[in-house]
Amino acid sequence: MSLINTEVKPFKAQAYHNGDFKAVTEADLKGKWSIVFFYPADFTFVCPTELGDLADNYEEFKKLGAEIYSVSTDTHFTHKAWHDTSDTIKKIQYPMIADPTGAISRNFQVMIEEDGLAERGTFVINPEGVIKIVELHDGGIGRDAKELLRKVQAAKYVAEHPGEVCPAKWTPGEKTLAPSLDLVGKI
Image (cartoon, rainbow, N blue to C red; front, side, top):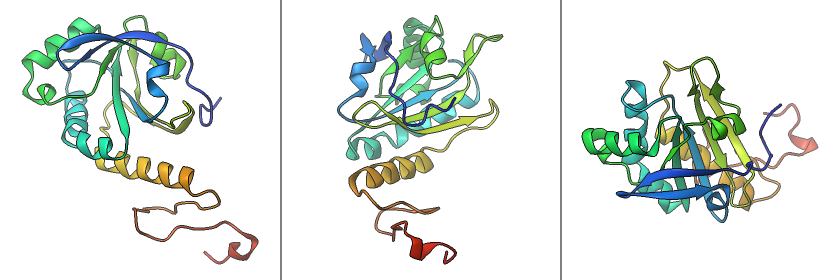
């Protein structure tokens, strides 16, 4: 079953954020656009490149009023240790959520049960707590923060402009489409 247009299920977890441990729940995702960014594990190979890319583009997400939450099945203690020892991960200013029981990963349907790890899953959630974008990648394929930023911009645009949709490769300022009978077969 697709998670598109479903509400985020309740959860409570510990996160490492700005040098401290803090509790995070599904309620924290409401009131703003949120990106929940699952990755397999700390101290690995592709994961730090993705999280570093998000860190490098974090200010652009914040300008959109969006918060990033990275999630793995590691503990919040492991997140802190990784943050303290990796130059790439030291750049992270967004919350790093711990999911050692896999409950959040199961809620988002990204848990790899036989490995106890999460798939590379990206979820964009609107301010009402409803999932608007779902993207899954194979473990060996890293994601691109700039493409994710474009998708968040498109999701925000569509939410703010009922009756309009964003075509492929749309970026802010470009033409959108207003679906109608007149467009059928004309694109």
